[in-house]
Each structure stands twice: as C-alpha cells, then as structure tokens.
Length: 212
Ligand code: SF4
Image 1 (tube, protein in one colour):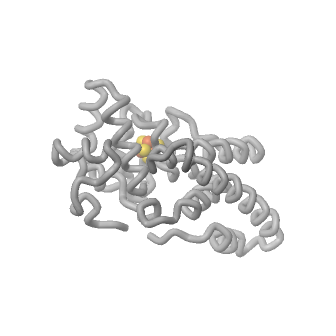
Image 2: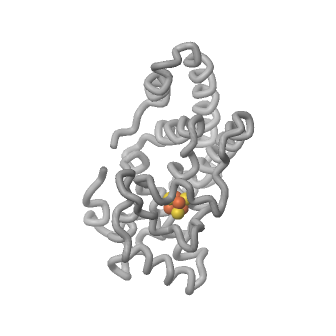
C-alpha cells in the first residue's frame, strides 16, 4: 500500500463535494504544519526514532480529539473495539517497535503470555472477513497507548490526520505498511526476536519479508 499525499487524498475524498474542498485543504494544511513542527522539534527532545514517533502520535491524538469534539464524531476510546474485528489493520515498522515495546515493557507476565498466545494463534486481519486483531484481549486493546495511527483515525475527518502523519514521516521505515497479525506473528515466532524490536530494529530481513 502506498502512502498518499494528504492533499491528493483529500481531493479524492471530496470528489463529490468540491464545495467542501477548500475548507478541508485549510484544515489539512494546519494539521500538516503542526505535525511537521512537532516532528522537527522532536529531533532534540526525543532523539530515538521510535520515541520521536510516539511524540508525534500524541500530537496526532490531540488533532483527532479536536476534530471529533467539533464534529460530534465517534471518539476512539479504550474498550471500544468497533474497528478491531472487521478491518484490515496495518502498521509501519516503527509502530511495530512501539507495539512490541508495550508488550515487553508495560504488560505484566500474565498479560504478556495472553497477548503472545493470541498473536501466535492469529490469522491476518481482513476487511473481507471478521478477524480480530491479535491485540484485542477481552474486548479491549492490550496496547492501547501504543496502538498504530490507523487505530486512532477510523472515523471520517481523523483519517486525514493519519494521512498527514504518514506524509510527515515519509521515510521508508515509517511509510511501508504491514498487516498487524502477520508481522507480530513473525516477531513472536522466535523468542529472541522481540528483544531486537524493543531495541528499535528488526532482527533480520525475514521479519519484514512481505511488505504490503
Ligand atoms: S492495535 Fe488495538 S486498537 Fe488497533 S486494532 Fe488492534 S486491538 Fe484494536
């Protein structure tokens, strides 16, 4: 899946409503400016790439929060799993680092065992069949604070924030998308691999063998 330019994406989205396009473009420019500023500032505040990305996601969350509040849209909240079962969930390499760090560093051993068991038993998520994301445990996201940007932006306008995040971080490591259950399965199939990901890097090329 290729990363689109946010403005081009908006033009497609608003193809049937050209009257709304100027407003959409103005909002997109504001979001891109804020994300670019945060991304550039994070070079000094969070030198590690995955920490920079985590900071960027907080800014994206704030933008999405503003949009959903204004539009009366459905806000994403812990415990809501509306999108976790019937969508193809994708994430980037750096988002995978944050997810693995969350499992390895923030879950207790019981929770971790449950999540790893779920990952190893999972089949790829799909928008064609109802397949839950492996991180959905007891109807809740087990890595909520570290979930990928796609999980923060399912509803209408917030989707544009996701596009903007991908545009701002367009370097290859941030833009290639992987199906979540398959990638996590490759990482957790070998007990040595998660530690490499916690350190911020894949363990070998086979981890990322089938980029989408
Ligand atoms: S990572 Fe969490 S929020 Fe995203 S699809 Fe999986 S369970 Fe749902």
